[in-house]
Length: 577
Ligand code: ADP
Ligand code: MG
Image (cartoon, rainbow, N blue to C red; front, side):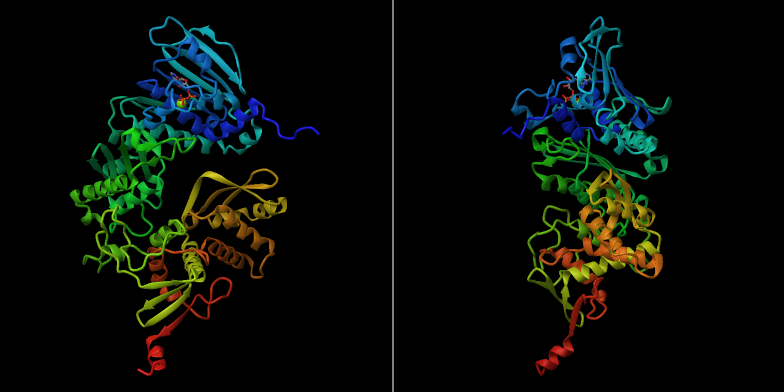
């Protein structure tokens, strides 16, 4: 019998690996720009055609590469930035994996033209789908030019997955702008299809660049933030609360010059603004952290977008306090429109409504230990401007909650009530035309039978109205591009799975309105906390906040009751008081 397990050929391995680093034109641009910065460039010029699908060129005036180095540039795990495992503990350069050029070389037609500082002439090398040419001597300006043509030419399935040139181009623009914000000492330019999108000089300061990229009005609303704690510092800006936006998309975090995504930093920022924003407002921020490289692990994500702090609490505290101090010093209060009777010191409670709380509820990690009557805020976060009242509750069998309410006790089915709250929230937002949508950074590709794909695509417009944007991704997969923000932290496959089920059941009589309602029900059901989930005190508090939806008759989406109320008068009667 012949063996069935084979080692994959090198070219296949490289193309699979490439998918992790290189996802779209913007990720190529990010890697190439980072290489230029690592090479000490003072000027980086980026040019794209067709949204980067046709061509990407990044040119720098950095140190360049000699013949021997350029010969290895397309080899995987070839890097000049790391030599032994000890180096992994203190990465100070942007690159270190030695994977970016190899990945691009494996999936596209690439060319490097480079001249080492002080050298008389340059060198050039090409890679076509992983096959490299010998290094040739070539005339070249000092520095390095890297060209990527026909991205994913050698992985057609991936190429089909690229979005329209306009969309890809927008992502490239954000990537270059992010690099330009983080590296103010370097000049940048971006040219799209032959016309210059922007050019910034090495001399511009950060606020000036923010004004260029995000508008003068926003730049004028910025308050400087600056704090240091034993070697870790946070610098940058937050916008005044009245410049807040409807999503977190305007929050920019950088770590040692690298744009990062980090939920704990978003949370810290929110804490700094506690009491100053309504539930669906998100602070605008540009925050730049500088941390000893030994204090952070940047090697947890192929695109290096996510990091792990050695002492996350300390960083959280530093950012939260820095933001709050900056806001207090800037005396932002008069700029906030308060509801008429809210200026009495209870701002935090009044302004923070269900939406934000629900979003927090949804994003809270599952299976945290239940805490009773504890402080809702851990000691690592800055104290809120006003304290929330503690909730008295008891979780029974991880399914039911017993609350003390104003007029008695309520026994609640946690799933049914949460589903009901989500449904109400979704319905009222859809009705008001204000359903907030979260675009997924990486579209979720969900496999399903071909018939279900067709079913979903046939209703694509209806689904888009509900915040679910779906595209075909092959015969048997759907690419989900967005979700309602309320459900953003939920498993997209679960949410979409519920929708398919409803569609498969056939049209409910009653036309479009009924269909919408059915779909919302299913989304709420799939996104709600399940029976068996441990809940936190904060979550319990949010459920109790909508005590008005506790109802023994009307029920959740499946027609079940959400809870029972027992008034004190009944209890008193029973105990003959
Ligand atoms: P990494 O950046 O992780 O080391 P890359 O594949 O991005 O891996 O690059 C491989 C090597 O090629 C780098 O370590 C560096 O020595 C060299 N290199 C890449 N781009 C440039 C550039 N623009 N200027 C000088 N050297 C470069
Ligand atoms: Mg690199």
